Length: 102
Image (cartoon, rainbow, N blue to C red; front, side, top):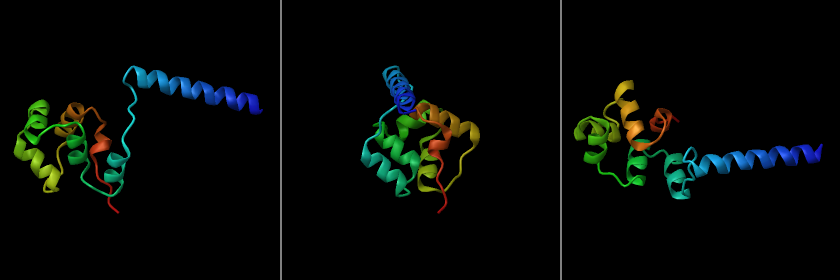
């Protein structure tokens, strides 16, 4: 039983390493995770982590800079279509941009 569990763990590690090598997985720094867990606006956190200005993100996503600013301040919710475009530009899933009410 233990040998089977060890083999399963080894396969899982190999799969993770394969995904990491081809860019399907990403290791995140602790400070980024901490900011997200503490409830900072995810779009702001991801944008800063990617090293983008609001204008650069807006250009990549095909939206206005003021729209990004309003989303980051929590003044707008964002349409699904625009959130998808922003998520693509940030290389994250749409769910990564959503805040969780506590």
